[in-house]
Length: 59
Image (cartoon, rainbow, N blue to C red; front, top):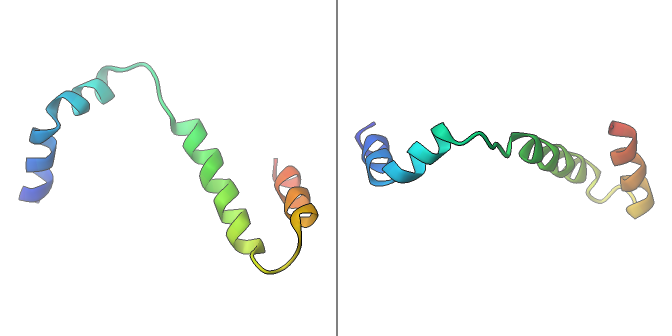
């Protein structure tokens, strides 16, 4: 816990910017995470066309 607190104190400017900034990467990160999950599930099962069908079908 102390290590976590020390990290926040060290990066005080970054933490303040993250809290006060109106911008977020949440939507982008979610899409990337979903794509990586599908890619891992399909590893070794098919070619690019099957992966593409799976990703487009997930939307």
